[in-house]
Length: 67
Image 1 (cartoon, helix red, strand yellow):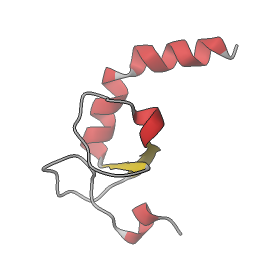
Image 2 (cartoon, helix red, strand yellow):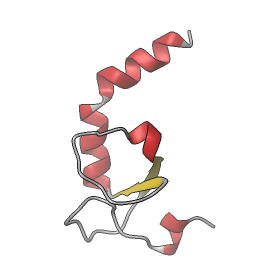
Image 3 (tube, helix red, strand yellow):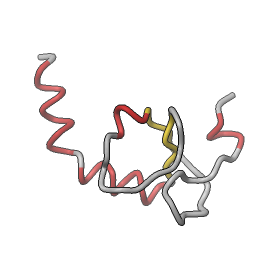
Image 4 (cartoon, helix red, strand yellow):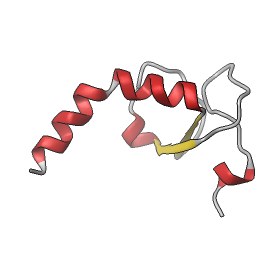
């Protein structure tokens, strides 16, 4: 059972919404958001969508390397 299912809050500074996803801090990078956390970044639905939009090109390039 993970922390998200236990009800951890979003790691974005100033957000009190419960998290839906967790991403490693290394994979998250900057993502255009200021977060607090050590190894994992917990994101609510809205911040996860925002992170996906801002890092789409970067993630596509990473996937292209493995093809």
